[in-house]
Amino acid sequence: MELPLNIFYVAATLLLTGFAWFRYRGLEYVIMHYRWVFVCLFLLPVSVVYDVWMYIRTWLIFKLNSAPKQHDKKVRHVQQQIKAWRADGMKTKMCTARPGWMNISFRRGLYKNTMKNIEVNLIDIIEVDTERQVVRVEPLASMGQLTAMLNPMGWTIPVLPELDDLTVGGLIMGVGIETSSHKVGLFQHCCVGYELVLADGSVVKCSKDENSDLFYAVPWSYGTLGFLVSAEIQIVPAAKYVRMEYFPALSRQQMIKRFEQETMKKSGNDFVECLVYSETTGVIMTGVMTDDAEPDKINAIGHFWKPWFFKHVEKYLRRGSAVEYIPLRHYYHRHSRSIFWELQDIIPFGNNPIFRYLLGWTVPPKVSLLKLTQGETIKKLYEKHQVIQDMLIPLGKLDEALDVFHKEFELYPLWLCPFMLYNNPGFIHPEGSADEMYVDIGAYGAPTAPGFQAVQATKNVEAYVKKVKGFQMLYADTYLSEEDFREMFDHSLYDKMRKRLNCENAFPEIYGKVNRKVRD
Image (cartoon, rainbow, N blue to C red; front, top):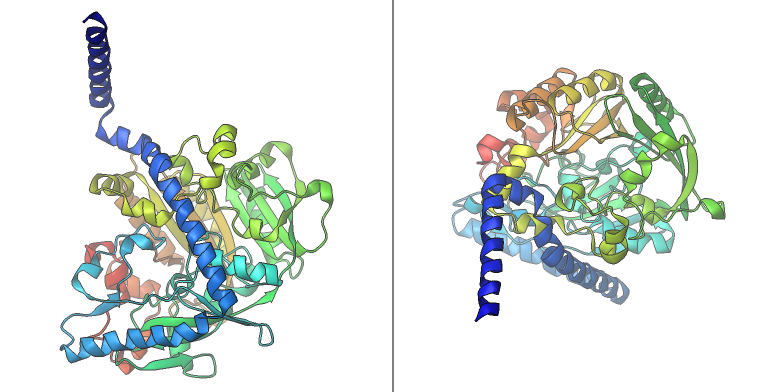
């Protein structure tokens, strides 16, 4: 009997010690710092299986050329649902049936609970037309699908946002940006045509030359003008590598000066970005596509055993300027493995060499699965302790904007990505009559500003962005009043199209979908 009693005493001691530690640390600490156990044991394996299945499915559909044949059938299914909704008396407004946890945004789409959900299951690449230099895709096709399909064929798209799971529909109906945007604008500026199902069930196509008002109103409309069922996007020749140059800056003035110089170069840089590591330090990166590379300087940064990209870049603050060559697809998805730097808050040891070599091939976990498995407590903790925001401001205001971000968030790294904002009709455009260079400031993670309060800090940053004639990306929570929201975003064309297409009783307004208070 002595051995069982000893085991019992040991087990009881461990249990009591664990309980005491849990009480001492508190529920919030345990949930925030030990979620990695569930992620590593469950979400990573499920994510791998899902990725393999999706890759095989996409490859087979494209090779068998079945996507074009199935597309029209899937569009008719959307039409039939809308016609049934109309026949039933249009009792509630419509939205897509895609669950809120499946999109890349951390925003909670509670509005779906009270609206008519329409199934829009369109996830394929329909056609690659190399003569017209366009790819026709369905709205749920992802950036990972596009690069996997186009790059081996020698093609790419002009603006290809980093994360694999970002979808074409989300980047059109919302917004998409990439380090090539200083040359070609936002994702919407690379689109040549859209196909939508409208509130009356009809199908309409639009472009700069056909139904141009609708074409310019669709971007940023968040599914409130109709259901996007396909888009045509420009394709351009791809190269094998990106020649990367790293320019570390050890002062704010040096960083901004170099960033502006590289952004405004008339030729030479296909890609420009900057990672800001502190109030005074950052690394500016420029890239040029090329088929030639110095063999000893090739860095396939996307391999699972490689350091996370933002950690790799940080080393140049000590090493000084450098040049290397990154394979094109590795470059496009350089931030995917670490979800920029968000994954370090979920798996703190994720960049450890031992973890990378043993389990690096399983990351990242699907953002959709992270959202699906969040309990109410985790959701509230993230809203309280985390910030995920992108603010778009005129390039000339970058210095003072960094001061605002430091004061309100004190969160690093920050992501800087320049883009040309064209003076086109629509929801966002420059204040004047000419095109203007803007910069996206991306803040992702846990702020360390003294006395940080998530809601008030976000409101303060929103107020600054509105004051300098900037814009807030709407994938994240916005706390703007409706009056301020309409002042920030030009609703004139949007309101005109809402009325023309009889959307008032069919779809909610954008503000109702993105504003935190109204949505809740």
